[in-house]
Length: 300
Image (cartoon, rainbow, N blue to C red; front, side, top):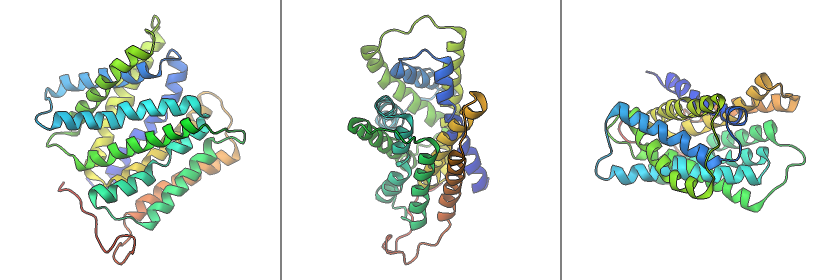
């Protein structure tokens, strides 16, 4: 399989994540963010464990807990804090700094080169997301900003470590370990901080099934598969597709208006994703930001 196919397959994950807002607001009971996050991760993880029938071994118990916390538990917890304390546009724009954090962490943990074009692409992506969803009256809350940056750092660290720590198992098994660990860590927090769910309707059950089976199990299999084959700095910018798809679905399904500025933002985001992939093909020799070093990657 060539790299373009791997990129397209990986890009399906953030595109599907863009439907999370639509499904959550239209199909799920409101006011249960931690419970929803737990039910999105734990049942899907347990189902995948039943399919693969393989548990972590040795140090992978600890590594799975760390990755599950970074990619799911801590990330979703901070994401919800940011979403509740900031307008959606501000929260999404703050979270969009993740590709920049990935570039730095990949340099520190993987020895990957820092390419100037990658930084330009990441900044363009942040700008595109801002054009998509920021409003003129958006307000800033310090705790919300800190939570948003913390969530971006958590997911960025999970992305890079998922590349560095690669067990000799399939992406399906790797996803099962992480989803289960993330769900287990979220379970006590959800039980302590939130009331029990109300009686679930058919729409609620459909929403939970979609978020668990499609929005978690399928997408993270594709995401971790991509990370096993591609550099984190190539995979992370694909996350810009998530808010883009959310805006498009809001227009197509909910009848929300799509302004010329938002249309331009979509073009900027897609351009930044394309530019980020081009950046990985640029030569790095002689770049003072790299110290003459090439990327150090694990054997495929």
